Length: 339
Image (cartoon, rainbow, N blue to C red; front, side, top):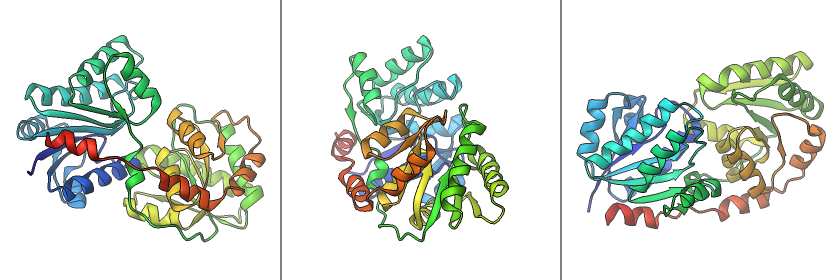
């Protein structure tokens, strides 16, 4: 039986990772014959790209109408229920869930990272909204521990992007670098990274990826300038504002990927591109340990030469085997929608 599904998340902001999650989710729901509406910052673009209905995220009348006429609200994926970005952001996403619960709609918490929740009020809000959800899935063990402490049942799932269908990459010797601005970003990290790239890869093309223009592009241009100052002859190019599949194509041509963002590393693994992780966030650290790939910290106290040697020594086939071993189980999601 066809159901009307509303999806709430950080969509329509041209963020590669979130759009990859949305693409995977929409593809699955449409394959099941569902009618899909996405709450988006850019509903015109979202509607055109994914061939779904879409409403503006802060047009609350449209959001209310969409939720009132749906069967199921899916909240996620990503880290929506946290107050590190802002308390306002947490209030927005929890309010969307509360609206669905007010209208007595099914609510599925989809592959979310719970927290950080720095305010007691934040913890109370999140505990309340997810305790009333019909089905809760979280994407990491830390989130699962938080939910369990609240006495709420949840299932830990792998990232949905693991189920994204892409072929093996065809390396062309390119070195990919993916950076984002962040509170812990610093010149020491950038300079050590630039120096090591110039030392090891001056004969390679360096492609620098801004996965979300507003957050990433400036720091990517700063890094490109550093590389040029160290070696004016080095070939560099900054990519931004590409459609998701175009970014994936660019990464598929890389031999190495030095990245901060979680989904840059995940896509690299799926393509068999040898990665080096920069651990700006706990989810990146977790992925690095899980996939057994080298990791450097934002403090940049490590020997970068040693880290690069570990990256070069990675076995491409083992990376592909790891990525292929990860599957996203849709069965309980489907059951929760249809029950």
